[in-house]
Length: 78
Image: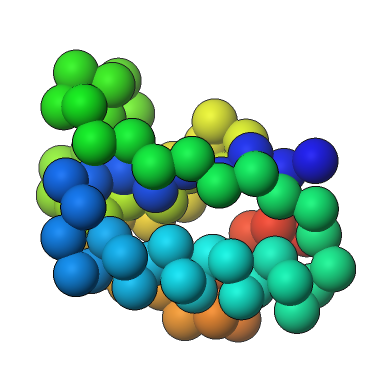
């Protein structure tokens, strides 16, 4: 199972990123657990400069932007 973390305070972009991550996992048929991380101390452990951030299996793959569905799918199956 892939662990996906959405890093951010819960803003509109964070919610949009979560929706894209859920859709990407469903389309790619990848079982995934999605965790929202809003605690700044936990977020800073990933060396994130701006939110929203996307972490796949403890690796920061995107920050400060909303990646495309295709990008997220690629990260999930890599």
